[in-house]
Figure 1 (cartoon, rainbow, N blue to C red):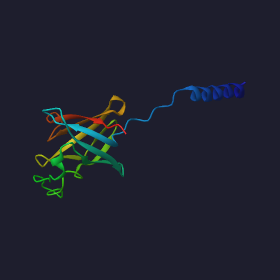
Figure 2: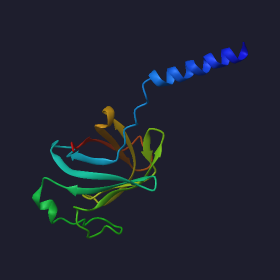
Figure 3: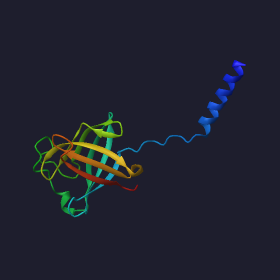
Figure 4: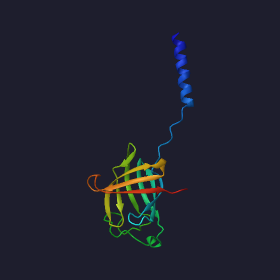
Length: 150
């Protein structure tokens, strides 16, 4: 009797696993994202986020503003000082912590400031919510980026 019950339980387990919907992959911040001006709402740039060794890095890959092609990061104070805006790595070393990415820094090329940040993906992977701050997360600025369509 025990073998029969065990056999029934195994069959039931296998059937449930076969018909249960598979868990969809969690949305990832990896990809290309359109950013927008906080004041005008106009598109500012496209940021490409990649994952290297478990950390996220983001680079400005394009801008609708033709003058951005010749701009350099004048106010940057680290190894990015004087580097072209297009191709500038603005996100460094963000690490996953549950459903957010944190621990790294984001650079604002306009003021040269480096900020702590958190990244969260929403809307089935179509929106990226980035919160940059100094000190504690309560104070800071939040932006929503939109994933580009392939």
